[in-house]
Amino acid sequence: MPTITFLPIQKKVEAQIGESILDVALSNGVQIQHACGGFCACTTCHCEVIEGNQNLTAADENEVERLEVLDLRTANSRLACQTKVKGDVSVRIVNLD
Ligand code: FES
Image (cartoon, rainbow, N blue to C red; front, top):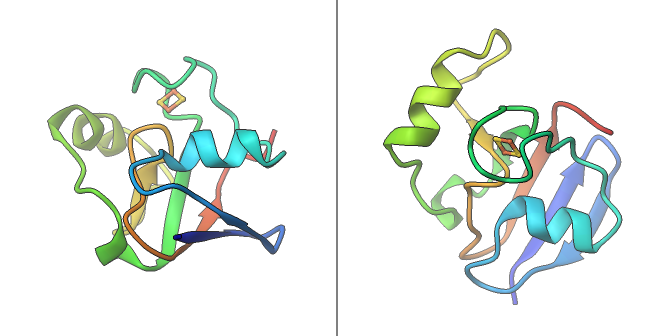
């Protein structure tokens, strides 16, 4: 079972393969902002992948377009609502609720 480590709060939780980072966070009490409700429309669920990029689904065109408008974007930025886990990852939450 994959694990997700959330930074900077240092919380490690288990996930099901195919679950989004946002769903895993919210079901484990990790308060990532998600103003649009997980529909790839707001970018408030922005997170930065610290480890395990290869264990995540690739960003689709919609996610890439959303990410391009972010001021704080890095090469490893993803939207938690669009990113599904396939293995262990570590992510930094940019907007804690
Ligand atoms: S929750 Fe709005 S883009 Fe992810």
